Length: 296
Image (tube, helix red, strand yellow):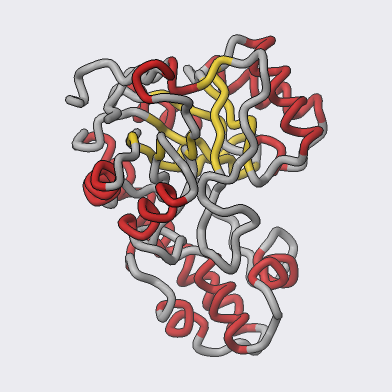
């Protein structure tokens, strides 16, 4: 479907929709190719899929072609890092024109910031006795512009410093730990504007993951909507059943579209496989009914 056409996907046209609208490939911090992810999604019964690499859309053509080859509907996707009220927040863009040059230029600037941060992380790890972290992490990078904390975590696991990537994050890579480097990402209003400018919808990713109190969560949601955000991830590997129900209730209350996704990165590391996110609860508006950008 042309990016200028409607992206609304109906159950009558596609059968019962099983969507996964949040996962990552080797173009960012995942380990599988877009083709392998599409195959995995199809095998797990996914009928509507989006590849949402961090600050990167160059995997979109391959993901779309692979999805079509497996008979899976496809929606363009990206996950953009933003800084808001001193926190790093993620916003998923869906259904945009992935050939939009303005969006790509803005994302390229964010990727350069990731490289700068990664060099600083390597220096910080060196100060606590972990030498060669830059070179080590690079062994796990497939896209040199998207070096992330996850790549450092994989290297430190290989060194035997920790047994899991999650353990590395907890000991070294989060605020207050020796390998943590603060970074200013995009402004929320800018990221939402880039997505909407390319014809897509902005979705607040895994809000329960930010571990903020309910008052702060409501403030975040209000700020997101004020800036043009229209959707929220409800069913995700980052939410337990209680959180899923809570954010579903807020989505319905505030008139937000509800999205779902596994946030899959790697078969061994991820909490949930592609296509295995819980179904959206009753009473919410599925995000695919509101998309305006490109979908097939």
